[in-house]
Image 1 (tube, rainbow, N blue to C red):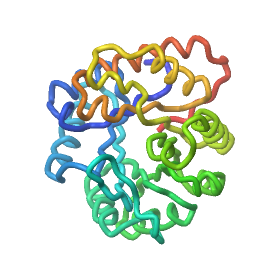
Image 2: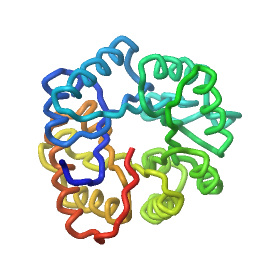
Image 3: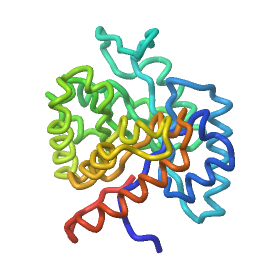
Length: 267
């Protein structure tokens, strides 16, 4: 049996939807598959879920799926923002995607731009009305979410430190300390916590990470993260398989330096 360790969440996109690439990513250590519903079409999503489910039998390993809901995201010519007038983080499009996820047996919905525990309650209501039992990941990426952090973590089943959009809301130099605090609260409440965004960003173009990126991943793990996530590295990057392999090696090394009684809350 494989030793218990932090999980690798790999986002699936154009660079990784081919059968042989997905297979190699699982071989290299991918534990959880993320589908970003800000992009792509439903037929491709269905095919991806089907391919991975068939591979599970070959590897004798269950791969949980996360649907990352776009929420009130507004795409700009360069980058994106969100509707600051929003009343709820759950949009009508999100409700359609939740229905798709329930019908296709995904495991988690990640709620974007969460502001309070009410957003989590609304998502859970939609899931329940559809007869689903999926769990909810609260993405912490707004300043207001930091003000309501403990209530949000209590309401959710897991938490994601979504550093990309969070970095647009708070000064960049505060992110490491905010990340540490989110992890600390999640651990206190026994909720899995994922650290995400630009973890091995240079591997979009290069087959090796920078020293700073390795240190960043290691720091997140030593702070107590239960999972670390690859985004563009595996959706549009040139080296999705290598990125997963590098992440696995970093986790393996970091584990040697963790306290023996360190607790993991896995997805």
